[in-house]
Length: 108
Image (tube, rainbow, N blue to C red; front, side):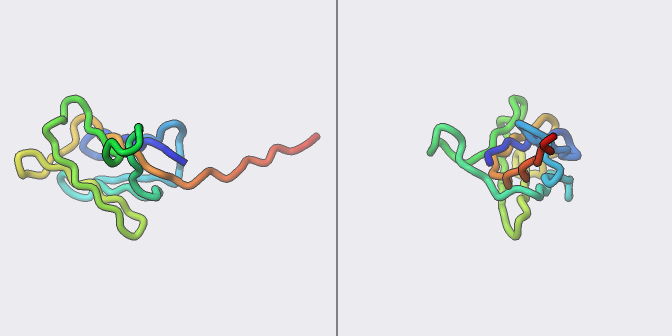
């Protein structure tokens, strides 16, 4: 399932759009380094073929993002002018996440 994970602010708190997913978590590891768990990796931005799935907030267009995915952990490293950059606004990560388990509705 496609989802957008928004990392916000220096601590990298995450929001999963279109719904909350308790299995997706994020945390700040070091200055300008954020770790995201619970995704299956980045997916291409729509329309297909227009680059891999992340976009920076309006105030952070000059920020370079280096994103790696290894052993089910996505690491986001942000730099500006060659230095680690603390996230002020947001970065949106376009990811694949596991489908939610179906909800069983009891029959009365």
